[in-house]
Image 1 (cartoon, rainbow, N blue to C red):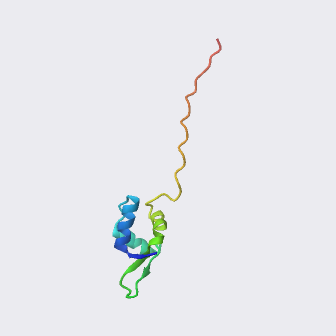
Image 2: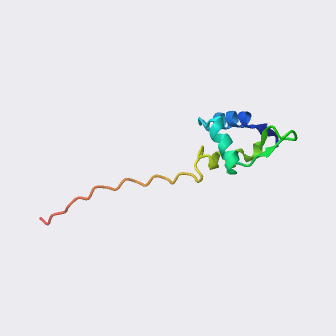
Image 3: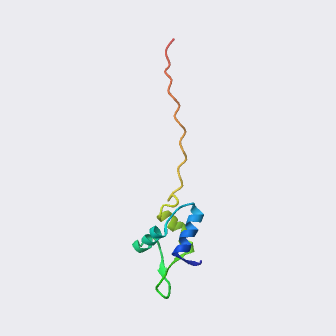
Length: 84
């Protein structure tokens, strides 16, 4: 797939996942090694593979790692029975 610069990837992630990830947060995740990225041939820019976006979204907490569990049914209130 296509490789994008940081700014384009952040814009894409925010649009796809309705998030507000900042450039700085994304850049620090790259430097920390939490987000896969590589340098371009000039060494001036970081490039991110578009196919890695779902993994990156999970890593940054933009989407849950696992689907949310179904909510359980509320417990019915107990009623006391009295012998008549």
